Length: 246
Image 1 (tube, rainbow, N blue to C red):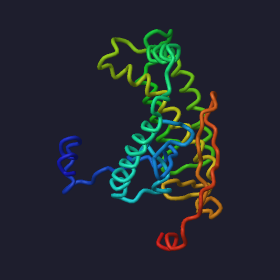
Image 2: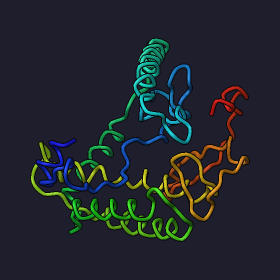
Image 3: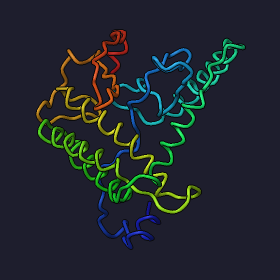
Image 4: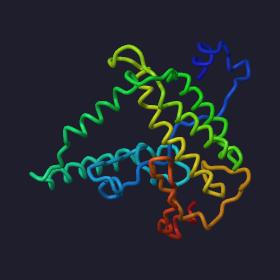
Protein backbone atom coordinates (compact mmCIF):
# COMPACT_ATOMS: atom_id res chain seq x y z
CA UNK A 1 0.00 0.00 0.00
CA UNK A 2 2.78 2.42 0.93
CA UNK A 3 4.64 1.63 -2.27
CA UNK A 4 1.57 2.17 -4.46
CA UNK A 5 0.79 5.58 -2.98
CA UNK A 6 4.42 6.65 -3.17
CA UNK A 7 4.93 5.52 -6.75
CA UNK A 8 1.58 6.56 -8.22
CA UNK A 9 0.72 9.69 -6.21
CA UNK A 10 4.02 10.66 -4.54
CA UNK A 11 2.27 10.46 -1.15
CA UNK A 12 4.02 9.02 1.90
CA UNK A 13 1.07 7.59 3.83
CA UNK A 14 3.18 7.28 6.99
CA UNK A 15 3.51 11.08 7.03
CA UNK A 16 0.69 12.44 4.85
CA UNK A 17 -3.09 11.88 4.62
CA UNK A 18 -4.23 9.67 1.76
CA UNK A 19 -7.38 10.06 -0.30
CA UNK A 20 -9.70 7.03 -0.38
CA UNK A 21 -13.07 6.39 -1.98
CA UNK A 22 -15.56 3.59 -2.63
CA UNK A 23 -15.43 1.53 -5.80
CA UNK A 24 -17.05 -1.63 -7.15
CA UNK A 25 -14.84 -4.70 -6.99
CA UNK A 26 -17.39 -7.53 -6.82
CA UNK A 27 -20.79 -8.09 -8.40
CA UNK A 28 -23.20 -10.01 -6.15
CA UNK A 29 -25.81 -10.40 -8.86
CA UNK A 30 -25.37 -12.71 -11.81
CA UNK A 31 -26.80 -15.56 -13.82
CA UNK A 32 -29.54 -17.50 -12.03
CA UNK A 33 -28.36 -21.10 -11.78
CA UNK A 34 -29.44 -24.41 -10.32
CA UNK A 35 -27.46 -24.80 -7.06
CA UNK A 36 -26.65 -28.48 -7.66
CA UNK A 37 -25.53 -28.39 -11.29
CA UNK A 38 -24.80 -24.66 -11.88
CA UNK A 39 -27.02 -24.88 -14.98
CA UNK A 40 -28.42 -21.51 -16.02
CA UNK A 41 -32.13 -20.84 -15.61
CA UNK A 42 -34.01 -21.16 -18.94
CA UNK A 43 -30.78 -21.25 -21.00
CA UNK A 44 -29.97 -24.91 -21.82
CA UNK A 45 -26.27 -25.61 -22.19
CA UNK A 46 -25.08 -22.58 -20.22
CA UNK A 47 -23.34 -23.14 -16.87
CA UNK A 48 -22.08 -20.41 -14.54
CA UNK A 49 -20.10 -20.23 -11.30
CA UNK A 50 -18.23 -17.76 -9.13
CA UNK A 51 -18.82 -14.07 -9.75
CA UNK A 52 -20.70 -14.83 -12.99
CA UNK A 53 -23.44 -16.62 -11.04
CA UNK A 54 -25.80 -14.84 -8.66
CA UNK A 55 -27.54 -15.68 -5.42
CA UNK A 56 -24.74 -17.11 -3.32
CA UNK A 57 -23.88 -14.07 -1.21
CA UNK A 58 -27.25 -12.43 -0.67
CA UNK A 59 -27.08 -8.66 -0.34
CA UNK A 60 -23.47 -8.47 0.83
CA UNK A 61 -20.52 -10.80 0.29
CA UNK A 62 -18.33 -11.57 3.28
CA UNK A 63 -14.58 -11.36 2.71
CA UNK A 64 -13.07 -14.69 1.69
CA UNK A 65 -16.36 -16.30 0.71
CA UNK A 66 -15.81 -15.87 -3.02
CA UNK A 67 -12.92 -18.36 -3.04
CA UNK A 68 -14.95 -21.16 -1.46
CA UNK A 69 -17.86 -20.21 -3.74
CA UNK A 70 -15.63 -20.59 -6.79
CA UNK A 71 -14.14 -23.90 -5.66
CA UNK A 72 -17.46 -25.54 -4.80
CA UNK A 73 -19.62 -24.24 -7.62
CA UNK A 74 -16.80 -24.25 -10.17
CA UNK A 75 -16.58 -28.00 -9.70
CA UNK A 76 -20.36 -28.37 -9.85
CA UNK A 77 -20.46 -26.33 -13.05
CA UNK A 78 -17.77 -28.48 -14.64
CA UNK A 79 -19.46 -31.71 -13.59
CA UNK A 80 -22.86 -30.39 -14.64
CA UNK A 81 -21.59 -29.36 -18.08
CA UNK A 82 -19.93 -32.75 -18.60
CA UNK A 83 -23.11 -34.58 -17.64
CA UNK A 84 -25.17 -32.34 -19.90
CA UNK A 85 -22.96 -33.12 -22.91
CA UNK A 86 -22.96 -36.83 -22.09
CA UNK A 87 -26.76 -36.94 -22.09
CA UNK A 88 -26.93 -35.25 -25.47
CA UNK A 89 -25.23 -38.25 -27.10
CA UNK A 90 -25.93 -38.00 -30.84
CA UNK A 91 -28.78 -35.53 -30.36
CA UNK A 92 -26.56 -32.48 -30.14
CA UNK A 93 -27.95 -29.08 -31.15
CA UNK A 94 -26.73 -27.69 -34.45
CA UNK A 95 -26.07 -24.14 -35.59
CA UNK A 96 -27.27 -23.11 -39.02
CA UNK A 97 -25.15 -21.23 -41.53
CA UNK A 98 -27.66 -18.38 -41.26
CA UNK A 99 -27.08 -18.07 -37.50
CA UNK A 100 -23.31 -18.14 -38.00
CA UNK A 101 -23.55 -15.42 -40.65
CA UNK A 102 -25.72 -13.27 -38.38
CA UNK A 103 -23.22 -13.58 -35.51
CA UNK A 104 -20.32 -12.85 -37.88
CA UNK A 105 -22.01 -9.74 -39.22
CA UNK A 106 -22.81 -8.53 -35.70
CA UNK A 107 -19.15 -8.86 -34.68
CA UNK A 108 -18.05 -6.87 -37.72
CA UNK A 109 -20.61 -4.08 -37.33
CA UNK A 110 -18.19 -1.68 -35.55
CA UNK A 111 -16.07 -1.70 -38.74
CA UNK A 112 -18.86 -1.62 -41.33
CA UNK A 113 -21.50 0.70 -39.85
CA UNK A 114 -21.81 4.40 -40.59
CA UNK A 115 -21.09 6.13 -37.31
CA UNK A 116 -18.75 8.48 -35.54
CA UNK A 117 -19.16 7.61 -31.85
CA UNK A 118 -15.92 6.83 -30.03
CA UNK A 119 -16.05 3.66 -27.88
CA UNK A 120 -13.66 5.12 -25.29
CA UNK A 121 -15.70 8.30 -24.90
CA UNK A 122 -18.95 6.34 -24.47
CA UNK A 123 -17.30 4.00 -21.97
CA UNK A 124 -16.12 7.01 -19.97
CA UNK A 125 -19.67 8.42 -19.95
CA UNK A 126 -21.09 5.07 -18.88
CA UNK A 127 -18.62 4.90 -15.99
CA UNK A 128 -19.53 8.41 -14.83
CA UNK A 129 -23.29 7.75 -15.00
CA UNK A 130 -23.12 4.54 -12.98
CA UNK A 131 -20.61 5.92 -10.47
CA UNK A 132 -22.48 9.18 -9.88
CA UNK A 133 -26.11 7.99 -10.08
CA UNK A 134 -26.09 4.23 -9.34
CA UNK A 135 -23.29 4.18 -6.78
CA UNK A 136 -23.12 3.40 -3.08
CA UNK A 137 -25.98 5.73 -2.02
CA UNK A 138 -29.02 5.70 -4.31
CA UNK A 139 -32.38 7.44 -4.59
CA UNK A 140 -35.34 7.44 -6.96
CA UNK A 141 -34.55 10.73 -8.70
CA UNK A 142 -30.96 9.78 -9.53
CA UNK A 143 -31.87 6.24 -10.62
CA UNK A 144 -34.51 7.56 -13.04
CA UNK A 145 -31.98 10.07 -14.33
CA UNK A 146 -29.46 7.25 -14.77
CA UNK A 147 -31.91 5.14 -16.78
CA UNK A 148 -32.60 8.05 -19.14
CA UNK A 149 -28.88 8.60 -19.67
CA UNK A 150 -28.24 4.88 -20.16
CA UNK A 151 -30.87 4.81 -22.90
CA UNK A 152 -29.18 7.76 -24.58
CA UNK A 153 -25.81 6.01 -24.42
CA UNK A 154 -27.37 2.82 -25.82
CA UNK A 155 -28.70 4.68 -28.85
CA UNK A 156 -25.31 6.27 -29.44
CA UNK A 157 -23.55 2.92 -28.93
CA UNK A 158 -25.35 1.68 -32.06
CA UNK A 159 -23.20 4.20 -33.96
CA UNK A 160 -19.86 3.28 -32.39
CA UNK A 161 -17.10 3.05 -34.96
CA UNK A 162 -13.94 0.96 -34.65
CA UNK A 163 -10.82 1.52 -36.74
CA UNK A 164 -7.86 -0.71 -37.55
CA UNK A 165 -7.88 -4.50 -37.57
CA UNK A 166 -9.63 -7.09 -35.44
CA UNK A 167 -6.49 -8.51 -33.79
CA UNK A 168 -5.22 -6.86 -30.60
CA UNK A 169 -7.59 -3.93 -31.03
CA UNK A 170 -8.96 -2.75 -27.65
CA UNK A 171 -11.20 -0.16 -29.34
CA UNK A 172 -12.92 -2.93 -31.30
CA UNK A 173 -13.25 -5.07 -28.19
CA UNK A 174 -14.72 -2.16 -26.23
CA UNK A 175 -17.21 -1.41 -29.02
CA UNK A 176 -18.52 -4.97 -28.59
CA UNK A 177 -18.33 -4.93 -24.78
CA UNK A 178 -20.42 -1.75 -24.51
CA UNK A 179 -23.55 -3.70 -25.48
CA UNK A 180 -23.16 -6.03 -22.49
CA UNK A 181 -22.01 -3.26 -20.15
CA UNK A 182 -25.20 -1.35 -20.91
CA UNK A 183 -27.34 -4.44 -20.24
CA UNK A 184 -25.71 -4.98 -16.85
CA UNK A 185 -25.87 -1.28 -15.95
CA UNK A 186 -29.57 -1.07 -16.77
CA UNK A 187 -30.27 -4.30 -14.87
CA UNK A 188 -28.61 -2.88 -11.76
CA UNK A 189 -30.34 0.50 -12.05
CA UNK A 190 -33.83 -0.93 -12.62
CA UNK A 191 -33.41 -3.47 -9.81
CA UNK A 192 -32.20 -0.73 -7.45
CA UNK A 193 -35.16 1.48 -8.40
CA UNK A 194 -37.65 -1.33 -7.81
CA UNK A 195 -36.16 -2.34 -4.44
CA UNK A 196 -37.63 0.23 -2.06
CA UNK A 197 -35.49 -0.54 0.97
CA UNK A 198 -31.83 -0.60 2.05
CA UNK A 199 -30.12 -3.97 2.43
CA UNK A 200 -26.45 -4.96 2.43
CA UNK A 201 -24.58 -3.29 -0.41
CA UNK A 202 -27.79 -1.63 -1.67
CA UNK A 203 -28.51 1.66 0.13
CA UNK A 204 -31.44 3.96 -0.71
CA UNK A 205 -31.37 7.23 1.20
CA UNK A 206 -35.09 7.64 0.40
CA UNK A 207 -35.74 4.16 1.92
CA UNK A 208 -33.02 3.96 4.60
CA UNK A 209 -34.33 0.91 6.51
CA UNK A 210 -34.58 -2.79 5.77
CA UNK A 211 -38.09 -3.99 5.02
CA UNK A 212 -38.88 -7.62 5.98
CA UNK A 213 -41.28 -7.83 3.03
CA UNK A 214 -38.28 -7.64 0.71
CA UNK A 215 -36.25 -10.33 2.48
CA UNK A 216 -37.23 -13.15 0.12
CA UNK A 217 -37.44 -11.13 -3.11
CA UNK A 218 -34.76 -11.36 -5.80
CA UNK A 219 -35.07 -9.49 -9.08
CA UNK A 220 -34.62 -11.38 -12.35
CA UNK A 221 -33.62 -9.21 -15.31
CA UNK A 222 -34.66 -10.04 -18.86
CA UNK A 223 -34.09 -8.16 -22.10
CA UNK A 224 -37.41 -7.47 -23.83
CA UNK A 225 -35.89 -6.27 -27.08
CA UNK A 226 -36.25 -2.62 -26.08
CA UNK A 227 -35.33 -2.48 -22.40
CA UNK A 228 -34.58 -4.58 -19.33
CA UNK A 229 -37.68 -5.97 -17.63
CA UNK A 230 -37.56 -6.79 -13.92
CA UNK A 231 -39.37 -9.81 -12.50
CA UNK A 232 -39.59 -9.97 -8.66
CA UNK A 233 -39.00 -13.65 -7.89
CA UNK A 234 -39.80 -14.98 -4.43
CA UNK A 235 -37.23 -17.29 -2.84
CA UNK A 236 -37.56 -19.53 0.21
CA UNK A 237 -36.94 -18.08 3.66
CA UNK A 238 -33.61 -18.83 5.33
CA UNK A 239 -33.66 -21.24 8.28
CA UNK A 240 -34.28 -19.44 11.58
CA UNK A 241 -30.85 -20.39 12.96
CA UNK A 242 -29.10 -18.69 10.03
CA UNK A 243 -31.21 -15.55 10.40
CA UNK A 244 -30.31 -15.41 14.10
CA UNK A 245 -26.59 -15.70 13.28
CA UNK A 246 -26.96 -12.80 10.84
